[in-house]
Amino acid sequence: MIDIGELILCGFSILLYQDLKKFITCNLNNMALTTFNSPPPISSLSPNYHPWVGRFLASDHQQEYHDQKIVQHDQIDQCPSTANNESYFQGKEEEEESSSPGTAKDGEGAVAKKIGGIKLRKRPSRLVVPDFLPGDDQEFCEKTRRLEKKEFEVEGRDFFLAAKKGRREVMEDGHGVLLDIMGDPKQAFFAVIDGHGGHAGTEYVAENLGRNIVKGIEHCKKEEDHHQIEEAIRGGYLVTDKGFLSQGVSSGACAASVLLRDGDLHVANVGDCRVVLSRDGIAQALTKHHRLTRQDERHRIENSGGFVHCHNGVWRVQGTLAVSRAIGDQHLKEWVISDPEIMSLPLTSGCQFLILASDGLWDKVDDQVAVDVVRREYDSSIPKACKTLVEMSSSRGNVDDITVMVINLRNFVQQPTNFQ
Image (cartoon, rainbow, N blue to C red; front, side):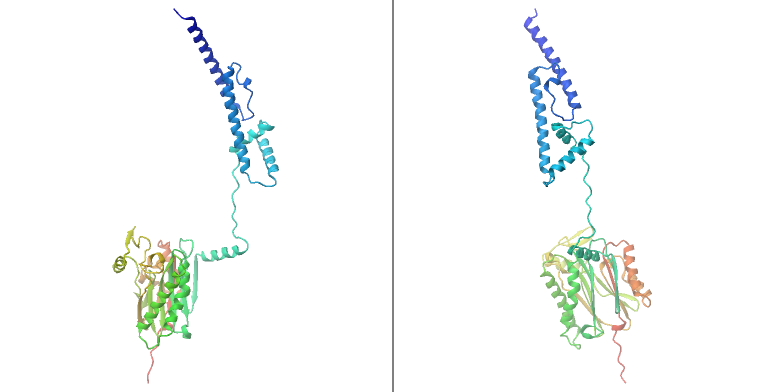
């Protein structure tokens, strides 16, 4: 037999379920159509809702509206405070009202419209950086543009130089020239420099290496042997290295130098710049690269407590630097020394010219090929030969800085004395 109480309770549950279903359906439709205006009155949500259910759901809707008001208030506080804030927001409000038809324009409706329109704001305008800055900054920009010049040539008495910047932001190659040393046109100093870790080392070596060597040879008499001259050259390199290290700069530089004095040729180098002599058309390398491919250099570094590591086919000191001798490089000074290797030889009538160049040339162009290129233009246009070598290296895939200097040796060869 069916209990009357259970039957009544079952019917009440069915009615409650139907009312809740109607309320939820009606409330979802209202939420889809709303534009975040002021919360509608509870009586408009559904004609058949129970009062306790309406109070519960309506309080949730009011809490959501209150949270939106807090977000809008925080966004206004984050805007820059100026004297025209009030007029600024009024203009923005009018602009958004005109671009959003069908929304409320009064009180809370306008505020809610702003919140709903945040995603529709336009992207800020692009920042335009001027090409130059006024005042002192303009001079800095002009100097930077000069440093970034991609190609340049230098022509002087008895030499010509051509250079091209590689893919780095700043040209790290350099050169140094001193003519008429101690008033003697038969004495001159030339150097090609290849910096790394910036151009600070290049600039310092270009300015000071030649001067330090000349100071050392001032006290050498002409009749003294090559050993005294070589010690003066070595001292010039070491003094230059010490002076650069005292500046506390972390960069470094390779260098190859030539001192022409009293009919003799004195060549010195640290790093991978190279000097090649053309003697009767035959290329003769006067320097050796200080790279870790040399077994004696690897042993020297390992015996002094360092280590060498080969990565992608390139040996590096302490896994970083690809040369074993250089000026500077304070963090590697225990292993990367600045003591140059020096060669001296007399100039003869067969000595035609010298090619001094950074590794940007020698990594792509063979010694004899370089000599042949210069010889073809030797009597007509040495500048053309220098530029041809630069372009040859670039066309073969070089992306490093390239510096090529050709020195004409005709005026430095000692003429034989005729005795009667």
